[in-house]
Image (cartoon, rainbow, N blue to C red; front, side, top):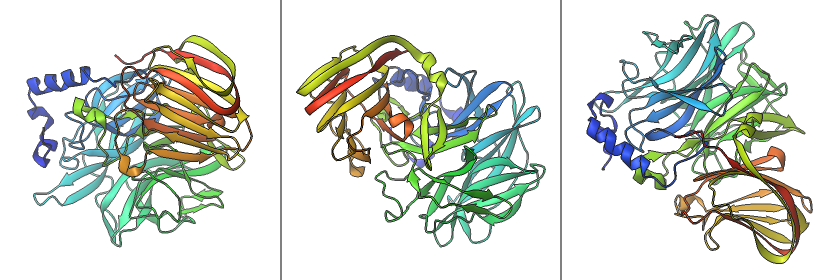
Length: 493
């Protein structure tokens, strides 16, 4: 199908039942559907939205264009869960059906207020000349899951000196006010985060752009979030066009974080003595949304996918997924990320691993499974390689060097190639001559790798053949290993 503008923005009700059945059949025949990651029932999934806890349940929405693997007429799809792992699909919840969101319901957030959930999101409108008009909109969800949109915009237009790139409100409660952080672009093509304030969630005042130590943050900032992690404010955001001299990254757009010292939304100030970091050192993380949960944890979820990149699943009528739910902690001035404790509920059969290698390659697991968890500790010297999703030739390679203190994730031979213009390997620094802890979650066509208890995370899509299920370990010197392997249950149909 040639996805022109007319098709992408065709009213969802105008698609025939035959066209919908054909799409679902394509997806059913896809070789890379996932077992325990959130994936779209059909079409494209992108930004996670409205991550919250309300009415004794976790709620999560994601942007969805249900008719194909492209960015088209966006909706919000709703999920709920009792444990952050087993998610129940509630269907399309926010549709582009008003004059203020006629060309798409873009990203936003949610916060519980008394006995309802307040939702704030960006409505996208285009005129006949395809000029964009962004509106910041509101809605309420009651305890029965019924959503009622507010009839008029909360914020009807962007401030003076800002372009129509004005979106992704994150709403937070601070002292006796509500604040909305909104990604924006100046007319000079500079990315900003704008701060709005409200006492009643109805009337919003523009406080100005957020002031923080970093300047020249590219031409647009998307998906801004501020959360508190171990009593420190942490700013998570996606600066498009960020100068490589400020932060090295290889993905088309980075997803970054900055630990702060203080945050005062009334004065629009975020102060920090820390450096800007990539949130994920892998290939495919973007649009992370985080919030402070009522149980005291700081939780985050990410889109595993990137804008403007074609993926091999496109040919089967679907694209992308969401990450595992991660808990955030700060230790020694560094942000750690690791899967929530509830992830252990997926575990099935367990295999204990223990062995020693000397200048050899060894098959350590041959289970013919594509959904598993592997936690392994490697001790040695010299260089080695852990081959995941391997058939003996093709593999996703983790190459570690104890002497140099480097770990390389190489997907150049992991299966069907894609996005090669942004490189096929990613490198992170690890402590030299020190045991390496790898906590790996493999799920058919995605892998999330947590290094040294979450000090670094590398996330990657991969598209292997059906034969690529073995795990090999090799070394050019001496290597001892021990750990555990679990098969993981499927939560998806």
